[in-house]
Length: 67
Image (cartoon, rainbow, N blue to C red; front, side, top):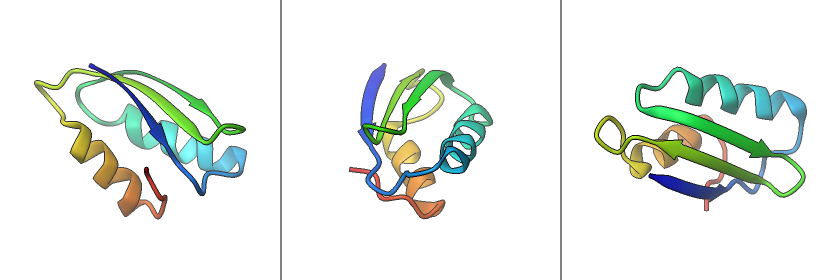
């Protein structure tokens, strides 16, 4: 599956690094591209292992606002 998640409060390179690391540690994440300037996380994942809801929950637990 492929999804585009808007993250409204991702502003710094440190934010990008934290999100990339967190997503990279999840089973089922195939790839992700983070565009800080646009506030977007473009993600490819295997929905057998992880759901989009769990990805949203992870981002929100980290303190980001996922739209």
